[in-house]
Length: 198
Picture 1 (tube, rainbow, N blue to C red):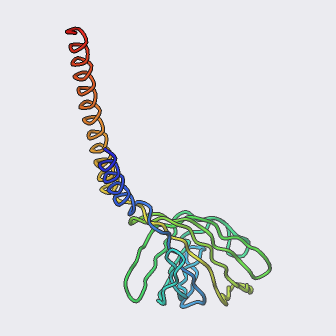
Picture 2: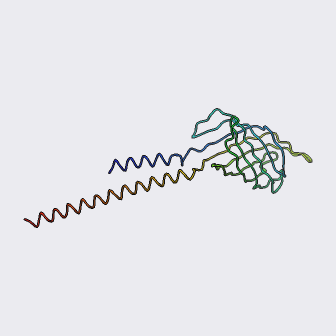
Picture 3: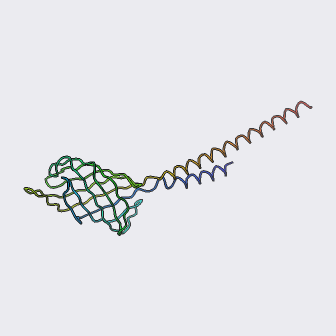
């Protein structure tokens, strides 16, 4: 019984591993391109590397984020709900997703773009700090730096497989209990018969 439970436990642990994958973080620094659209920001920044489970991989890429229409103003701050965010590493698209959040003025020329995203099997958040100088009718974006944290969303098949494993484990335990009860009844019946014949 112990070996059956041990094997089932190991099997369940192996099935659950993909559901609890390490989060990924991505740091970026510098502007590749930037512009304003719909009263908001569209920018691309160079990646410094990807960190998976505490290990930094030596890869570079491009993080693109846009606020879409900004409710408020670039100079004073605001919120957005129809933005986009995407990550490309070494020319390969990792994800692209919808993006919601806020554009907040922190000091005279420092602004924070912070938001959450979800889609294509990932969800996460990003915080980007922009250095911006405003003129009469212009905005001069000088630099950006930030970090993006990404978590994978387990596909439904992982949970189905995990549930099937639990059902199998429950069935095996139930069968073992039934067999044990039959053995106890048989022993009790044999013991009673042996004691009455003496």
